[in-house]
Length: 309
Image (tube, rainbow, N blue to C red; front, side, top):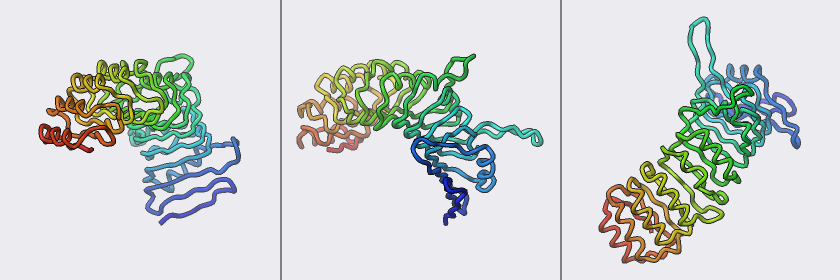
């Protein structure tokens, strides 16, 4: 059961009687955004002590979020470094309460200086859509211009966004330890500008890029990520025989490969992927030129692999 509370003529608050899920929505006109105060969040935390998910829209987030929040969706808003949940020290009990924030989604957010540098170390997944990443948002303060890298950030998701190559390069430079990078349906991505930063990358999804991925990009991926990559998605790319050969020869740890809608490959090319039979467990070759005979042979020599055609 959900309770609806009208705080003012502009502020709407929804919260569950179980205190497990809360959505806070500020309705405003145009760009006239204002933000909740620290007192507001303190009151919210008291009313919903087990708050886990928070969805904020059309706000100027400056006051720190409740420490209990694990999932944050922020849309069409402003974000300051002080808006992230902070560690708290209880002098009476001599204990420290750390932020529990694990997942963050930023959609149409304007980032102030230091906003990304202040991202809590507890965050594991970050999805960025229609959000510019100026260099200043990675700067912690005027004295220390270094980048603060969250120790647990494992997944960066730019899917369906208009993020530019320099922005993605800045993000991967700030967080080189990410293991998952998602770029589905992005604009042209020059992989040479950032894959060298990602020496731990295990999952790369670059399906249906708006400017199709070419063999040159595949070569860059294979040369730099051959030792770590476990999952590769390049559906709808301009993959040719050369690119397929590079994947089969260099991505020797690959467990999942998505090459659906790669229509330039002749049927015989798919036999190359049998070279990965020792590790490959999923192969999507649907909507390609592969014929039933080739599929049958692949299934015979790769019995442990689930082949989708």
